[in-house]
Image 1 (cartoon, one colour):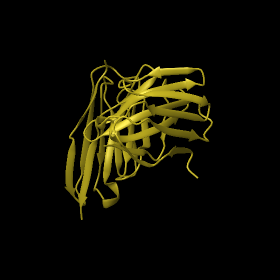
Image 2: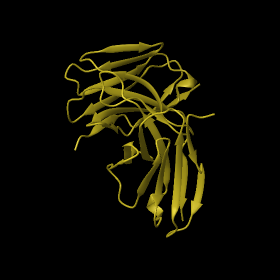
Image 3: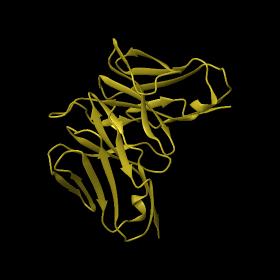
Length: 116
Length: 109
Protein backbone atom coordinates (compact mmCIF):
# COMPACT_ATOMS: atom_id res chain seq x y z
CA UNK A 1 0.00 0.00 0.00
CA UNK A 2 1.13 3.53 -0.74
CA UNK A 3 2.50 5.56 2.16
CA UNK A 4 0.75 8.70 0.90
CA UNK A 5 -2.75 8.09 -0.46
CA UNK A 6 -4.85 10.58 -2.38
CA UNK A 7 -8.55 10.35 -3.20
CA UNK A 8 -10.08 10.71 -5.67
CA UNK A 9 -7.46 9.91 -8.30
CA UNK A 10 -9.55 11.46 -11.05
CA UNK A 11 -12.48 13.83 -10.89
CA UNK A 12 -14.48 15.74 -13.47
CA UNK A 13 -16.72 18.46 -12.16
CA UNK A 14 -18.54 21.57 -13.29
CA UNK A 15 -17.83 25.22 -12.67
CA UNK A 16 -19.14 26.39 -9.32
CA UNK A 17 -19.14 23.00 -7.63
CA UNK A 18 -17.39 22.36 -4.33
CA UNK A 19 -14.63 19.80 -4.51
CA UNK A 20 -12.57 18.15 -1.78
CA UNK A 21 -9.35 16.25 -2.39
CA UNK A 22 -8.20 14.09 0.46
CA UNK A 23 -4.77 12.95 1.51
CA UNK A 24 -3.76 10.47 4.17
CA UNK A 25 -0.32 9.21 5.13
CA UNK A 26 1.14 6.36 7.12
CA UNK A 27 4.68 7.73 7.29
CA UNK A 28 4.17 9.44 10.63
CA UNK A 29 5.43 12.76 9.23
CA UNK A 30 4.34 16.02 10.78
CA UNK A 31 4.69 18.10 7.60
CA UNK A 32 2.16 17.89 4.80
CA UNK A 33 1.80 19.87 1.59
CA UNK A 34 -0.51 20.39 -1.36
CA UNK A 35 1.07 21.16 -4.74
CA UNK A 36 -0.47 21.84 -8.10
CA UNK A 37 1.22 20.76 -11.36
CA UNK A 38 0.56 22.42 -14.70
CA UNK A 39 2.51 21.75 -17.91
CA UNK A 40 5.56 24.02 -18.15
CA UNK A 41 5.02 25.47 -14.67
CA UNK A 42 6.40 22.73 -12.48
CA UNK A 43 5.03 22.17 -9.00
CA UNK A 44 3.54 25.14 -7.21
CA UNK A 45 2.78 25.13 -3.50
CA UNK A 46 -0.84 25.79 -2.52
CA UNK A 47 -0.86 25.22 1.25
CA UNK A 48 1.29 23.49 3.81
CA UNK A 49 0.99 22.38 7.41
CA UNK A 50 3.70 21.54 9.92
CA UNK A 51 1.37 20.08 12.53
CA UNK A 52 -2.34 19.74 13.27
CA UNK A 53 -2.70 23.32 14.52
CA UNK A 54 -0.54 24.88 11.82
CA UNK A 55 -1.79 25.99 8.38
CA UNK A 56 0.20 28.17 6.00
CA UNK A 57 -0.50 29.65 2.59
CA UNK A 58 1.77 28.78 -0.29
CA UNK A 59 2.37 30.76 -3.46
CA UNK A 60 -1.03 30.09 -5.07
CA UNK A 61 -3.57 29.73 -2.25
CA UNK A 62 -6.35 31.92 -3.71
CA UNK A 63 -9.46 29.87 -4.45
CA UNK A 64 -8.36 27.01 -2.18
CA UNK A 65 -8.70 26.08 1.48
CA UNK A 66 -7.33 23.23 3.56
CA UNK A 67 -8.04 21.30 6.72
CA UNK A 68 -5.58 19.30 8.81
CA UNK A 69 -7.95 16.92 10.55
CA UNK A 70 -5.22 14.83 12.15
CA UNK A 71 -1.50 14.30 11.82
CA UNK A 72 -2.16 11.79 9.07
CA UNK A 73 -4.84 13.67 7.13
CA UNK A 74 -4.71 16.86 5.09
CA UNK A 75 -7.54 17.79 2.74
CA UNK A 76 -7.72 20.44 0.03
CA UNK A 77 -11.00 22.12 -0.90
CA UNK A 78 -12.10 24.17 -3.87
CA UNK A 79 -15.18 26.02 -2.62
CA UNK A 80 -16.35 27.02 -6.09
CA UNK A 81 -14.34 25.34 -8.80
CA UNK A 82 -13.39 27.23 -11.96
CA UNK A 83 -11.89 25.90 -15.22
CA UNK A 84 -8.41 27.31 -14.59
CA UNK A 85 -8.19 25.07 -11.55
CA UNK A 86 -8.01 22.12 -13.91
CA UNK A 87 -4.68 20.53 -13.01
CA UNK A 88 -2.89 17.61 -11.40
CA UNK A 89 -2.79 17.96 -7.63
CA UNK A 90 -0.20 16.30 -5.42
CA UNK A 91 -0.12 15.81 -1.69
CA UNK A 92 3.29 15.37 -0.11
CA UNK A 93 4.79 14.76 3.30
CA UNK A 94 8.20 15.39 4.79
CA UNK A 95 10.23 15.13 7.92
CA UNK A 96 13.28 17.16 8.83
CA UNK A 97 16.67 15.81 7.86
CA UNK A 98 19.89 16.59 9.62
CA UNK A 99 21.62 19.67 8.25
CA UNK A 100 18.59 20.76 6.29
CA UNK A 101 15.59 22.92 7.03
CA UNK A 102 13.61 21.10 4.34
CA UNK A 103 13.32 17.35 4.27
CA UNK A 104 12.83 15.03 1.33
CA UNK A 105 9.26 15.13 0.03
CA UNK A 106 7.22 11.95 -0.38
CA UNK A 107 4.44 12.45 -2.91
CA UNK A 108 1.10 10.77 -3.32
CA UNK A 109 -0.01 9.36 -6.66
CA UNK A 110 -1.81 12.57 -7.61
CA UNK A 111 -5.41 13.65 -8.17
CA UNK A 112 -6.32 14.79 -11.66
CA UNK A 113 -9.08 17.38 -11.54
CA UNK A 114 -10.97 18.65 -14.58
CA UNK A 115 -13.34 21.58 -14.19
CA UNK A 116 -15.73 22.05 -17.10
CA UNK B 1 10.55 36.03 -3.94
CA UNK B 2 13.02 33.30 -4.62
CA UNK B 3 12.91 31.80 -8.09
CA UNK B 4 14.36 28.55 -9.36
CA UNK B 5 14.92 28.46 -13.10
CA UNK B 6 15.52 25.23 -14.94
CA UNK B 7 16.74 24.68 -18.51
CA UNK B 8 16.13 23.27 -21.00
CA UNK B 9 12.37 22.84 -20.78
CA UNK B 10 12.48 19.85 -23.07
CA UNK B 11 15.12 17.57 -24.58
CA UNK B 12 14.83 14.68 -26.96
CA UNK B 13 17.96 12.51 -27.24
CA UNK B 14 19.00 9.35 -28.99
CA UNK B 15 19.48 6.39 -26.69
CA UNK B 16 23.13 6.30 -25.65
CA UNK B 17 23.60 10.06 -25.82
CA UNK B 18 24.28 12.14 -22.73
CA UNK B 19 21.80 14.56 -21.16
CA UNK B 20 22.20 17.52 -18.83
CA UNK B 21 19.66 19.74 -17.10
CA UNK B 22 20.61 22.95 -15.32
CA UNK B 23 19.08 24.69 -12.35
CA UNK B 24 19.70 28.31 -11.32
CA UNK B 25 18.46 30.13 -8.25
CA UNK B 26 18.04 33.85 -7.76
CA UNK B 27 19.37 33.44 -4.21
CA UNK B 28 21.98 31.35 -2.44
CA UNK B 29 20.60 27.97 -1.43
CA UNK B 30 21.31 26.04 1.75
CA UNK B 31 20.71 22.85 -0.21
CA UNK B 32 19.18 21.61 -3.44
CA UNK B 33 17.09 18.55 -4.15
CA UNK B 34 16.43 16.67 -7.38
CA UNK B 35 13.31 14.67 -8.23
CA UNK B 36 12.27 12.47 -11.15
CA UNK B 37 8.70 12.06 -12.36
CA UNK B 38 8.02 9.22 -14.78
CA UNK B 39 5.25 9.80 -17.34
CA UNK B 40 1.91 9.39 -15.56
CA UNK B 41 3.64 9.10 -12.20
CA UNK B 42 4.48 11.22 -9.22
CA UNK B 43 7.76 12.98 -8.34
CA UNK B 44 10.28 10.77 -6.58
CA UNK B 45 13.23 12.09 -4.62
CA UNK B 46 16.63 11.39 -6.16
CA UNK B 47 19.17 13.25 -4.07
CA UNK B 48 19.99 16.25 -1.91
CA UNK B 49 23.18 18.30 -2.18
CA UNK B 50 24.27 20.48 0.71
CA UNK B 51 27.93 21.47 0.37
CA UNK B 52 29.43 24.08 -1.95
CA UNK B 53 30.97 22.36 -4.98
CA UNK B 54 29.53 18.99 -4.00
CA UNK B 55 29.42 16.23 -6.61
CA UNK B 56 27.44 13.03 -6.11
CA UNK B 57 26.96 10.08 -8.41
CA UNK B 58 24.21 7.51 -8.68
CA UNK B 59 25.21 4.98 -11.37
CA UNK B 60 24.92 6.97 -14.63
CA UNK B 61 23.60 10.12 -12.91
CA UNK B 62 25.98 12.85 -11.73
CA UNK B 63 24.73 15.72 -9.60
CA UNK B 64 26.67 18.93 -8.97
CA UNK B 65 26.12 21.86 -6.65
CA UNK B 66 27.85 25.09 -7.66
CA UNK B 67 30.57 26.74 -5.64
CA UNK B 68 28.32 29.74 -4.96
CA UNK B 69 25.40 27.43 -4.09
CA UNK B 70 23.18 29.18 -6.63
CA UNK B 71 23.21 26.60 -9.37
CA UNK B 72 23.13 22.87 -9.86
CA UNK B 73 23.17 20.33 -12.65
CA UNK B 74 22.11 16.77 -13.32
CA UNK B 75 24.02 14.86 -15.97
CA UNK B 76 23.00 11.47 -17.31
CA UNK B 77 25.63 9.47 -19.16
CA UNK B 78 24.53 7.20 -22.00
CA UNK B 79 20.78 7.65 -21.61
CA UNK B 80 18.47 4.65 -21.64
CA UNK B 81 14.75 4.46 -22.32
CA UNK B 82 14.20 4.01 -18.60
CA UNK B 83 15.50 7.56 -18.07
CA UNK B 84 12.45 9.16 -19.69
CA UNK B 85 10.49 11.53 -17.51
CA UNK B 86 10.60 14.99 -16.03
CA UNK B 87 13.48 16.03 -13.80
CA UNK B 88 12.88 18.74 -11.23
CA UNK B 89 15.26 20.66 -9.04
CA UNK B 90 13.98 22.24 -5.84
CA UNK B 91 15.50 24.70 -3.42
CA UNK B 92 14.37 25.81 0.03
CA UNK B 93 12.66 29.12 0.61
CA UNK B 94 12.52 29.30 4.36
CA UNK B 95 11.14 25.96 5.45
CA UNK B 96 9.38 25.03 2.22
CA UNK B 97 10.61 23.93 -1.20
CA UNK B 98 10.39 25.90 -4.44
CA UNK B 99 10.48 23.75 -7.56
CA UNK B 100 11.87 24.55 -10.96
CA UNK B 101 9.57 24.07 -13.96
CA UNK B 102 11.30 20.80 -14.80
CA UNK B 103 13.08 19.36 -17.83
CA UNK B 104 11.20 16.77 -19.87
CA UNK B 105 13.52 14.08 -21.23
CA UNK B 106 12.50 11.85 -24.11
CA UNK B 107 14.78 9.09 -25.35
CA UNK B 108 14.62 7.66 -28.86
CA UNK B 109 15.56 4.01 -29.12
